[in-house]
Structures are given as structure tokens and as C-alpha cells.
Length: 436
Image 1 (tube, helix red, strand yellow):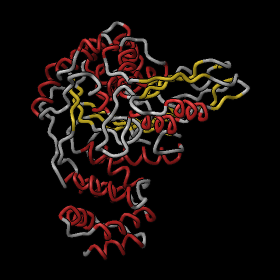
Image 2 (spheres, helix red, strand yellow):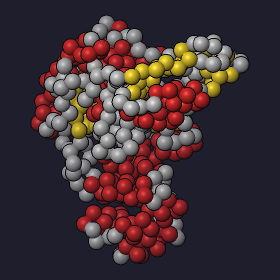
Image 3 (cartoon, helix red, strand yellow):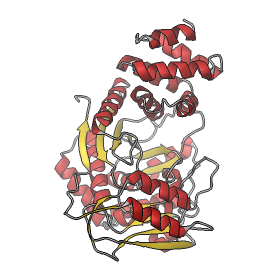
Image 4 (tube, helix red, strand yellow):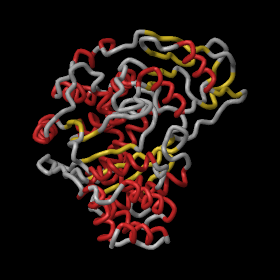
């Protein structure tokens, strides 16, 4: 069937066969299907949707378009976690050491950030000397030897997804659940593993703004994972305000270190404990209460932090900068933001804070932008906190010619203060497994 017939079929809401989807994606990667034709198909999918069989076929076609990564020589049950994004989301830096200290291998391939802050690789590179460019043999050896490794993805994983994502961005079809789900899951399933936990963010700072759409995305991704033989669970977590207190690469590394030493912000700590408990239960089948108790012990007794130091040293990072975070990169300038009102913090819009951090130098607009590792925002007050006039709300960090006074006004304008106490809703909203 020609691509025109495939477009026509989907335009009328009909179901595409596995072969039609596979042939179309293959032809698109080869260049035989043009961008304008694929744009029409993406828009037809946007309006007509796809059933799970079609989404599975699309996911498989994207996996088959490039290389797959075989981590089967890593000893033990291989676990992985994926977050759909957020502001101040540094959970990988905390979760990996917890899991590996518990005895689960954590070999992860991550990416760089485009937007408000760097991705996991960028954050790790805030540690002087840290090397994310590992070969597959090095990833396997490191995971077997010390329990964890985090490295960049190979360039030829899911090339179809790379082409499709760029086109979706240019054609306003990014927010299609079949396209989001197949994009995320193709990258996860192209890498061998046993258990996958999806942290699906919901709210102002997340891609999915409401619980209904986030739940639909979570169910779709869990269904894909299980269809491909990967034990998959999703947790819906709130992202109305930044997670933790730090937004920015060095700032987030410092906060991860604090958390691994048992001194992290309550919300970040509780989320990491919950994610670790769920992944360990998926892998080992132990009782949640027993797992959670052990996880908390690993944070309090220093074992998780010691594991983080072994991980950093193994990948060439400066352990001295981990033991003394003042040695991490810092910005040239800083400015304090003081409250002009009294009451209770009722809103700190995560997305706006993220964009402010980006404009201070913590994130990228294009992949060619150079990050200022010391730039970002540190929140001294969060939603629900009481605040008086003159109380410090945040510290902003930037370098060079950044207009710090304008940044201060932006932050002050985005924070809402209520007269009455504010209820802070639970961070974890829901959980989705194969039984839905």
C-alpha cells in the first residue's frame, strides 16, 4: 500500500496493519516518504488516534529502524526508570545509587536536556572530569563491577523517532498520546532490561497538564511495555511546583548529594524512596514495607552516598567535588528574592521557574547552546510555607551579562501568596500497572 493510501485510511479513522506501519516508517527513514507526506499522516493520527495494536506496531517499527542495545551480560535483574520530564527532577542521580547499594544493577543510558535545564548527562557533567561517553563494554563492566553506570545513548538508537520528533515539533502534533507513548517506549525498549518504572509527571511543569491525560498516557505506555515482555509500572506524580528546591545543574547535583546523605528536601526524598521501593518490589518481589525501611537506612547510614562516590570515581569524576560540593561549578552572580507580602505561598509555577532558570543559563534553547553549570534557581520557600515581608523566597544564580534584577522581578511576579493557609496535595497521585 502506498503512503497516500495509508494517509487516506488513517484520515478516515481506520486501523492500519502492522505491515502498513512498518513499511511507511521504513520508507520515511530511507527518504522515500517525504516530510510533507509524513506530516499529513501525523496529523491524521493526531485526530483519529491509534489503538494499542497500532501503537505497538509503530513502536516496533521505530525500534527496528536502528540499533538495539544488549545489556543481557549484566548480572541480575536489570531495572530502569524513565521520567516524562519536570523541573528540578534529579531523581536518577539519587535513585541509581540507592538501587545499586540495595543490590540491583543500574545500567542506564540517558540524554541531554533541551529546555529549562540540562538532562541527566548534563547534570553529571557538572562534576569535574565526569565521563558519560562509555562504550557498551564499559557500561556492562561498570555495572557488574560497581553496580551502576550512566552513559549517553548511541547515535543510532531509534533514528525514526528522531526524525519523527523533529517533524512533530514543527507540525504541532507533539501532544498526541499514541505518538508520545511510542516515542518514549521505543527508546526504552531498544535497550535490554527486565523492569521499567515510568514517572509520569502531571501539572504546570509537566507535559501532561491534567490527571486524565496523564493517566491515559501512563496506561498506554504500560500496555506497550507489557506487550513487549517488559514488566512495566507507571506512577503519576505532581509537578505543579519544582521538585525539591534546586533548579540548575550544579545546584541539583548538590541537592542530590544532600539527599543521598539523608538531608534532602522532603518531597524529593519521598519520591525517590517511593520510586526505589516500587522498582525493588518489581524486581525482587519483597514486601514494600521491608524494602522502604531498608531504602531509608541506605540514605541515613551513608551507604547510598558511598555508592554515588564509587560511581563518580569509576566514570572519571572528581570525588573531592562530591565530598565538598563547594568545589562544583558556581555562577559569577547571585541575587536574593525577598517577599513583599505576608501570608502563605500558594503557587510557584514550575514551568515559569524552569524558563527563568534556562534564561539564567541553566538550560538550552538549541542543542548548540553552552550551559552555565552554576546557573539556576534555589527555592527557600515552597507551596504551603508561611512567609512574611522581607523573608527570602529564592536565590537566583547567573553569569556574564545576565540582568539579575530583571530575573528577581520575574520570580517575584510568578510566586502567589494567599492570606489563608494552603493545603499541599500529595506528590504521588496514582499508580498504573498492567491490570490498570
